[in-house]
Every structure is written in structure tokens, then in C-alpha cells.
Length: 572
Image 1: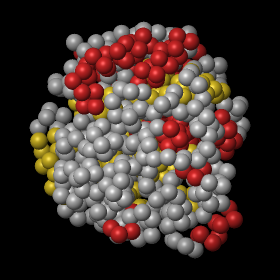
Image 2: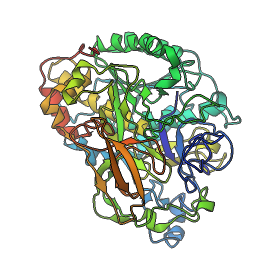
Image 3: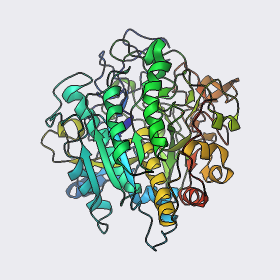
Image 4: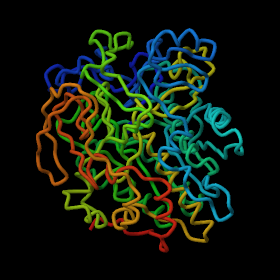
């Protein structure tokens, strides 16, 4: 099971994707698949398997985080003419754009959602959002309060509870290991949990938020899933109808082996139990495009063909993919090279022409596919589940197609989080009392999407209607809901040379040749890899699904429905 978080916060890119470089387009001894990859910091040239599965990091180095607070603002202002993000403390960030809750709420139209029948803004009142993460965070409540005090100081204190159904593992000190579980796993998951909590809150700040923290960390396969699903089953029984569950974990379908259908069916029964009481389950589709990791050699080898991930592929789960939101800026690369190959770990030799952006403009939303680290939205067709009946409206697929819906997941254009857990891992130094970081990944998209449905359920509750029920059949069968989406098509940014000729698949399975530069955001094939991706078509495609919801129109369309969907997830 993989963390689904991409973070602009940690040190020297050493704890992100768990591979080293391959030089010939084939799996190297340490597992990376890359046609060249020499500039790719996510594939750290350390020769070792990295500790935290599928966690992409951007270093907290002086070359990026130019100032840590207001006191350094004047000094750092002269360091560069380009500041792409200003932190709430006044610190400045180069190369990476960032968003506050207010900016995301404005960009997606959350601020335009109609007031409740009481006349109050719709902040998710009366709704419950359950976030499912391994380990949780020892500083979750305090960090959420800091986030609230920074961005929502006039609202009531957050309604937040962290639950340890199997006991608190008490990994409250700095990471001191190198495995996938234990203190190392707990440190990695603390950032994931913090992202989930703060950004579910950012969309629905008056909902009740529950963090369900269950050790141990899952690895590729099913070892940790029984505990997770036992905990989810209990939460289904004690939470009100219409609860939304956000899950930021996954396993490549092939990791289940020959018993995949039998094993996943056990867990899917839990989802069915929740759907019967009008709950919804959202899962992050994945963060490495069609390039997914296997469980060989401690999760360090990639499959040579497009793969997708469970539980996003379950026909009882809403699969959330990723876009790159360019709000107030437009990427304008004229080079395909993000940094000098021998200086990938510190950004001290970043290539300005790769990172250049036009400020004061809005580049819209493109498929999430960032070549500097080979991170991007997963999508494709399941090899476990047949195409559900409700999905047949968009075409005939060989299996369940994902994703269903998308939201901003970019790291360049990521969201701000405050974290004080495991400071040696998450911040500049072990002595830090907390820091602002920039986070992305489909696990940033997932809690926000779940929270948006909580807003729809709040509106329905105040209109004396039952919860909306399982979203997928509604989305695929209801024109008014489909029209509430921004459909993501091909985008071409900047003037970098189109040096790459790749093979993509269309939704019909037809191979198509595409000439690309780094700014050619048309698919979810990772840059300079040989595993094909899926080309962006509209209105539905296998990279971003239906696209990104326009919040106000989306909530209005769900409010207008008279029926609640609790069944209809069949695969026949």
C-alpha cells in the first residue's frame, strides 16, 4: 500500500520515489524505468531503495525555500527576481507555486456555493468526513488548529478527532529507521495524514473530521489491509448516513497475484456495506502515471506495461485523479531540462528556462504530469474488475476504467500545509517547531473531492433530503452532473522543443503517436519512460476521468436530485 502524497517540503529528495536511475529504458538492477532520467531527482542516484513508498519530495533547501520567516524577507527578496510562492510566515519559495485554502476555494468556485436554507454559508455543517491513514500524526490536532488560526480565524474551532482503533503506536520521535513501517513509516504517514486533515477542513471547515489511524503501514500486497478494513467497518457502523470516507492508499492490482479477485472481494464487501447507508468512499488513483511499482525487492521494480491501483479500481469506490491547476500563473518552459544532471538533489543548478512561468495569467487546468520528478495522475483499465453497468455510458472498456473525477494534484501548484510532527523528517531541522510545506499528489485531490460531496450532503440535509448516495452511477448517468465539470483536454505550454516521440493509447485502445516537450500535457505517460499513457480526450478519458468539478454547479446539481443512490455499483 502506497502513500499518495507528493510534497514540496522534505530534505534532498531522498525519501520519495523508491528507485534509482535506469539508463537504457529497461528495468535496472535497482528497478527504475527511464529512457535517460539523469535529471530526475525523484529517482535519486543513491543506489538504494528509498524508504517511503511513492512519496515524491522537493527539498527544503535554501535554493528553493529562500526565507523561513518575515525577518528574512528583505534579504531573500534580493536573492532572486522570481518568487513563486510566499508562505504565511513571509518566507519565499522559488520554482514552486502554492495555494492557500482561499485560492483553491475561489479557483474551483467553492465560494460560490449557495447558502444553506438557514442563510449560513455551506461549510459542511452536520456532515462527517472520515480520513483513513496508517499511523496518523502525533501533532494532528495542534497542526489543524494552527491551520485554522492562519486561514479561518473567524470560524469556530475545528471539530476533529483522531482515533487509534488498534492503539497509538507512540512513534512520536524523529525517524530513525530505513524500513517501510515502524518509525520510518510513521514519519512518512504523518505528512499524509496532515495533508488529508487540513485540506478536507479547507473545503468543509464546519464538518466533523475523523482521522482513522491504523498501523502498520501496508506494503505492496495485502498485509496491512485487514486491520484497515476492520477499522473502516466499525466507523461505518457508528457514523451517520452519508458519511464520506477519503483514502490515500493503494496497491498496484498485480500485487495481489492470482487471488486478486478473491482478496479484493473481501474488502469490497465493506464498501458495499457503507454504500447501503448512502456513504461514499473516495480513493487516490495514484501518482506515477501508468508506471506502477511491484512488490519485488522492497517495492523497487516497475511493471513494463500500463497498470492501475486498487482500491481506486473497485466498482464501489470513487477514483480521484489529478490535474495541474495554474491559477494566477501559466507555465512557460522553453527547455526540457529542469536542472543540471549532476546537481539534482539541491536545485542549486536548476534551469530557469524550464521553470519559467508567466505571472498574472491563468493557464487553466491540464492533466497532472510533472516531468521534473516523473509524477502524475494514474489512470487506465482494471484487470480485476469488469466494466460496471453504470460506466458503459462512456464506452466499452475491457474492465473498470479509472479515474472517475479529478482535482488539482500538482506539486508545482501544490497546497500549503502546516506540520510539526517529526521535524527532522518534515521540516528543516530536528529542532524546528513546525513548518509550512507545499504538498501535492492525488491524495491532495481526494480529501478535497470528498469534502465537496460533504457540502452537497449538507445542502441536501438542510433541504430535508437524504444524502446523495454513491456518486459514480450519478456521475456517469446524469447529464446535469456531467455538465458541472471542467473537462480536461490537451494543453501545450511554452516553447520547449518537442524532442520526444511517444506512443499513447486513446480511450478506445487505439495506439497513437504524440510528439512532446515537457510542456505538452496531453497524457499520463511519465516523461522519458517507455510505458505508454492514455491520451486526453473529452468529455471522459482515462487520465482525468470527467475532469474537475465546478463546485457551485456540482453541488447545485446534486441538491436538485430527488433520489438517493445506494445501489447500482454492480459490475454486470
